[in-house]
Image 1 (cartoon, rainbow, N blue to C red):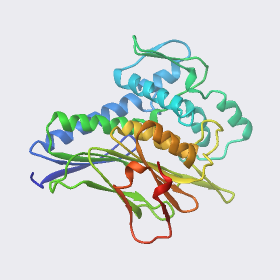
Image 2 (image 1 turned 30 degrees about the vertical axis):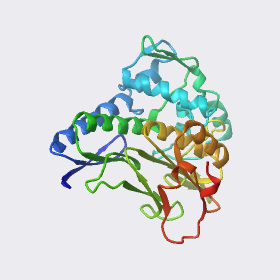
Image 3 (image 1 turned 90 degrees about the vertical axis):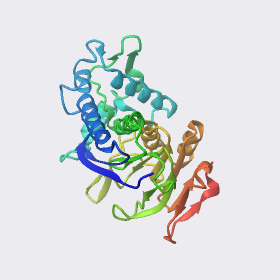
Image 4 (image 1 turned 45 degrees about the horizontal axis):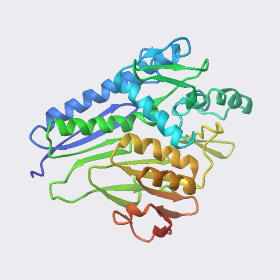
Length: 323
């Protein structure tokens, strides 16, 4: 296989999307993927009233809203992951996320009464799906959904489908930390993806995961946060409380063949904590790396041969604590 590749970077879906594609039709493939990312963003943009999500949030209580195959499928899968995580992941959390100003310039700590009011709107059970018609309806007035916690995963999966259709030799795509690899590198070795050291600045890694035709997705409390009166508030909100998840974890990295699944599972596992989160990952059959606040690295047994720490950085490697 030729080691030549093309690389591109665009800003889309709220993040920088970087591709590296190997093969004679790399240029055509990259363009197709970029166009697909833009199409998906237009469908699912929470902040645009004209998007399908915007229309659903505006009229979903009044009537059934017909959706495209993509958006309906993502909502259906999101509801499934809400069910298996017992609500630790929930796309109907949008009204509470808005209160906190997550990913805006207006982050704040809401009043307790505000959270109580908005948390009453949150439940995946309030999503009524009609598979025959591809429609969704809300059973509660003023509820909203946001696919931000799962959309990039779906986009990575769509990119992989395009790589396959175009018969490229190999490819790598990174959607703001959501990484997917396709095929083998030119030297036939595995791809190596660094796992962020959560106690250090971005780009400093704690270890390396070796993967092939898999996705790596991390949820961590260091990614986005703000401080108020000396207290840090991170962006991963627990749908059951309306407050930032208060587990014993700094980060959860999920390795799976489907990036959308990794997106949902990493968030849910982070909210649940290491014990319940590990059980969720085990039940689903994915791989995971958990980093706790007391500097323990816990991995699932199916990841033991494919993950290693770099240097002696004060972390306790609990490989046998995994599954």
